[in-house]
Image (cartoon, rainbow, N blue to C red):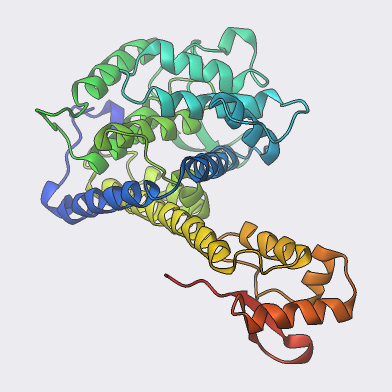
Length: 371
C-alpha cells in the first residue's frame, strides 16, 4: 500500500464538512466562553493561570515524546519570557528553556505568518541539548528514510515512512503557503477552525520535516491555527489532553497513513481540542472560586489554617485525592494533633470545609460556592 503522501490526491485532504458542523459550533461557543471567563480575572490572576497552563503544556508536550522536564525550570523560563517576576533563580536547563521559549514565541507572535525561519528557530531552541549542530534548526537531509518503527531493531515494524529528504523543502514550501493562505481574517474564513488545526497537524506530521522534535512543533502549529481562528492566544491544555489519551492519539494518526479522507481524524482531534478547552475553563473558574473563597472569610483564618487551605487549593479543581485528612493537616502545618483537630473543627463550623466520614476515615473538602 502507498503512504498518504504517495497518493495522487495528496495533499488535497477530503472531509465531510456537514459531519463536523456541530464540533465547529461547539468550538466557537466554548472558545468564547473561556475568553469571557478569563476576562473576569485581575491581571495577576491572568498571569498566574497563563503561566500555570503553559507550564503544563510544556511538560506534557515533552512527556508525549518521552521527555521528563523539571517543572519549576519550565515555569521560571516562562515567567522570564513574559517579563514576570521569577519564582526561581537557579539555573534553567536548555530543554526547559527551549520548550518555554517556543511557547512564549507562539503566544506572542501567533498572528505572524508561519515560515521556515520561525519553524527552524523553534527547532533550534527545542533541540539544542540533543542534536548535533548540523541537524539544529534545519530540515532533515540524507538518504536514510524517515520511518516510524517499533519492535526488533534488526527486523522492525514500519508504521509510517515520511517523504524522502530530497522532497522536504518542496513539501514544506507548499505546506507553509497553504497555512498562510488559509489564515482567517475579517473578510474570509477559508477553513473552519478545528478543521484547519487538525489538518495542519496531520500534514506537518506526515511530512516529518525534522530529524526530531516534529511532534512538539506540530502541536504548537496546531495551537497557532486555533489562536488565529479566535484572534487571540487561547488557553488550551491541548498536550495535557492528548497525553492522557496518548495511545488513542497515535492510533488516530496511524489511521490516516494510507488515505487522505480525514473526517475521522478531524472528529477525533476536534474532540481533543474541546476537552482541552473544558479543562482550561475548569481551572480558570477554580481560580475565581479561590478568590471568592478567601474574600468571603477575610482574616478569619489563623496562619496554620490559611497555609493548609492554600495547600489544598494548589491541588487544583480535583483537590486532594479522597479529601484532606488530619494527617495531611499535621504534615502541612507541623502542629500538634490536638491543635489540628481544633483548627479543622473551626474550619468546618465557619463553613470553609465540609467534613465526611468518621475517626480515621474522616476527610475534609473545600466548600466552594458560586456566590
